[in-house]
Length: 621
Image (cartoon, rainbow, N blue to C red; front, side, top):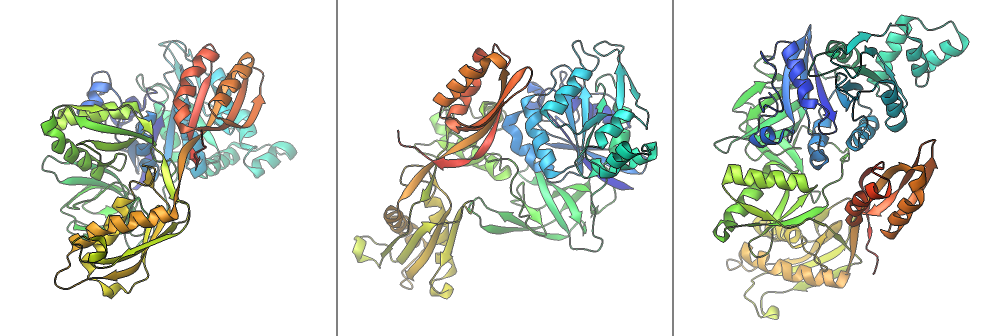
């Protein structure tokens, strides 16, 4: 037996959960088909997911085909939950990207395919809903080649498309269209097509497997998750074209926590994909975590219970996934073994909102609940706000609505969310130093001496705290009090935004035993740090989005004029036979306006895609 970990990815409502149900049912993992509308699917088991009919959290289910166990990871489709998809991508051997045969290529589909191709993750394309009115095949294939990737070819044909009698058949192994498509990515097939002799069916099978495995080519399958047509051919493609990840026998355990679920008693269940080695019940594990400010921390615990997905033995072996309990404080993204240096594929959220309880007496309860949710799930960024509020970083309005429902259902708290606003950042402008001696210079009772230097750090480093003093010059608790307070204080800079990419160095320290306490250092640090930051100065930065918009030929002038008024900088404009493609960058605070204006400027025919592309210094107005 070997295991494949396969992700099902799609734009919302393309049929991911329905396909998962069909695969599990057809292979005996469940005895009846669940329905998204009926709220009884296997993977969307949360109350809010059942009510809304959408996937919010990645879920895992398994079935077996011959000597292959397939672990299915069903991921969210709504763009507000893109970080949930990011976490799943780290543990996949391959992916199935769903499209609706009716709606076709949608904005989120393009975002996902871009990322899958950048990761070179083996990906099959499944065109779902062929039995629905309005379904297309040839036209949709042309859209896929134009808007997703040209390196595709169908491995199945469909007759009666758009009717209840839609039927799927496999294409012959020596299909000339497949040879022509593979010739664009495989030099040996190209030589055979151009110079002869023509590639044999066996040559094409080998080339198809190799190019799919390296992520440069994407086979297309047609079918219907609800009706079951074409699903068997898709499964055959998954097993035959996606190779399992290589593993190292006898190596130290190495893995990734990609999901965490809270239990009724507060204990957390962590879903761990193991890449190398083995994990057994009662084994003690040390997980590594990279904090937002760049620091690395450790989380240790003993495995109380280990449940391997698919029931593949009492221990977790390389290539498999297990649900573990006993690791107190575990979070999504924690690593077993070594930390990955791979940069995140999706940018962090940029919308900030303030949340307050409708009943003032629940303010403390609200803050506790949100901080607990954020501690379990890095998709939610929470910190205490002013006047009993909690500040949250989010991706969008749907995520806000889901959080409100979670607070009401799970915690009994009715909460109000302020309209989201774009989050700005500050970076130090120069170098600044400040210090204070014990205790009389400030007229305070802080029995502490602290000197700090603030300076710019490397881009992307977050916050770094270092020492020029001897580590033994202060008790460890005092050092920790200074470091923790530095990072907490930098949450609010000179312009009211969070400070990032800074380097703070402790240049002077002293204490008076036995009078000094950690509280003295926590109290004095913000005073000294603020003064040093004022001397260094800071610049305010705003996030930008890279965008693409496809508009009708006669809409180019009004669309570009509108985008220019929003501060867009254009990087390219290319025209086709039916539409213009406009690319550029736009301040994140104007993206929503651009999306809302586009339909009116293009008679509803414009298509918009954007993602965060970094930030720039805020222009003076």
